[in-house]
Length: 314
Ligand SMILES: Nc1nc2c(ncn2[C@@H]2O[C@H](COP(=O)(O)OP(=O)(O)OP(=O)(O)O)[C@@H](O)[C@H]2O)c(=O)[nH]1
Ligand SMILES: [Mg+2]
Image (cartoon, rainbow, N blue to C red):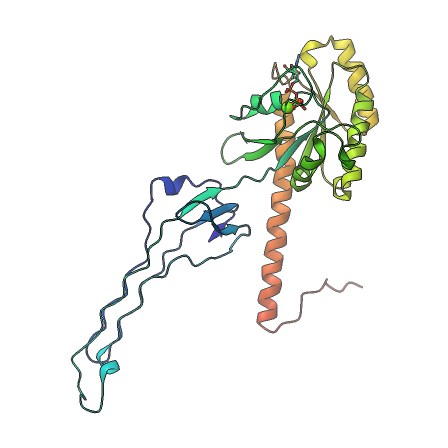
C-alpha cells in the first residue's frame, strides 16, 4: 500500500522476508479454519514493484492509499461439515489450512523531482546540485556538459527533504526542439517549482532570463502558474558593485526577488534551498488537503448525503 508519509525503502533493507499467515486448520464440530491474516507492506509513493527477474514492472504506486495484492495469505481449512455425505454423516476429516503464496519481488523507488533547475548552458546548475546533494553530475567549463537530467536529494534536517533535478541547459528555440533542452522540459513540467539560475558572469542577465522564460512558457502553459525562484549565480567571481547592478537588472526582467548566490562558495545557497523547500511544502500541503476533500466527498456520497456546499450567507 502506498503511503505518503514514507520517503525511503530503508525498512525493507532489514526486513526482506515478509509473509502473510497460513490459514488455520479446519476443525471438528463444523469449524472452518480462519483465513491467514494478510501482510500489508507500506511503501513510499513512487515505488515500482518488479518481478523476480527485475525486468517486468508489476506496479507503479503513484497515489496515497493505492493497494495492490501481491500474494495471498493462506485460506482457512474446511471444517468437518464440509465432508458430510449420504454415507458419512459424521465425518472426522477436516482440511489443513493452506500455506501462503510466495514470490520474490524487487522494489525500486523512482524519484520524482520536486524542484527543477533551469537555465542557459553553463549557468552552474550541475555545480549547484553537487553543492547541495550527494549527486555528482559532471560539471565543466563548456555548454551542454549535462546530457541527461540527474537527481539529488536535498536534505535540510528532520524530514525536510526534497528532490532536485539538474536539467540540461536550455537555449533559444528549445521549445521547438533546438539543443537538448526540449526533451527535458517535460521533467521541469512535472516539478512543483523551478529554480531559474542565471550566470552572473555574463553581461546581460536580464536577457538570459527572458530567453529561458520565453522557451518554458512556449513549451507549456503550466509554467505560467508554476512557482519560480530566481537566482544570480557565480557571485563569488563578481565585485559587489557588479552584483548590485546585475541583480537589479535581473529583478527588473523577472519581477521577482533575486537570490545572489554562488554554487562554488556556497554563499546564500542555504536560503535559496529554504525558499525552494517552502514552495514544495506548500504544494505538498495543498495536495494533501485536496486528497482529504476528495475522500470526504466520496464518504458523503457513499452515505447518500448531498455534496457539501458553501454555507449560505445573507
Ligand atoms: N566562479 C564560479 N564558477 C561557477 C559557479 N558555478 C559553476 N561555475 C563554473 O561554471 C561552469 C559551468 O558549470 P556547470 O555546473 O557545468 O553548468 P551547467 O549549468 O550545469 O551547464 P550545462 O550542463 O552545460 O547546461 C564550470 O566551469 C563551473 O566551474 C560559481 O558559483 N562560481
Ligand atoms: Mg550541467
